[in-house]
Length: 70
Image (cartoon, rainbow, N blue to C red; front, side, top):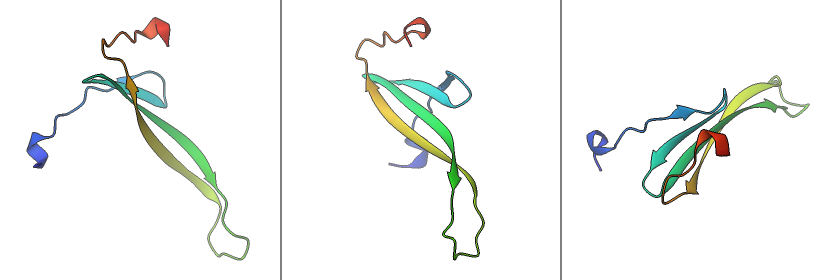
């Protein structure tokens, strides 16, 4: 599929780290979390933080997921 045929999603922020987008048959839910990275003690690299993002599909054929039901 060419890049110009990929539909854009209308993401709705639920909070600072979570967003959702209505798709056919339900919702895509995107979550971002700040994770501490601990390096091996013998490594010259330093400990730090990194952002990790995950996306899941929540089935909801009638798209009845309203803000007050979260």
